[in-house]
Image (cartoon, rainbow, N blue to C red; front, side, top):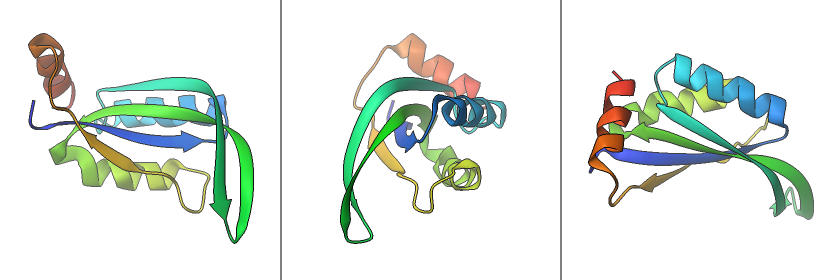
Length: 105
C-alpha cells in the first residue's frame, strides 16, 4: 500500500485521453487509467484567466514507475505544460493493491 499512487492529468479530448490511457497501460507505467469526461477547468495561463472543457485521467501506478510515467505523459500530451500530480494512497483493498502491483511488473 505504501507504494501505490494515483497520478492525475487533464487532456483536451476524449480521443487524446483514450490514446494516452492505452499507451500508459501497454507500457506498464500504469495498471489502470480512469477517463472522466465533462470536466470544466478555469485556470490562469500566460497572464489571462482561461476556461476549457477537459477530460480528467486518474492513473493508478506505484512509486517505482513515477519517473517513467511522467516522461510518458509529457511525450504523449498535447499541452506545453501538462498537469502531472501524484497522490499517495493511504489505504485500499489488499486484493486490488496486489493486482495493481502485479499489473506493473
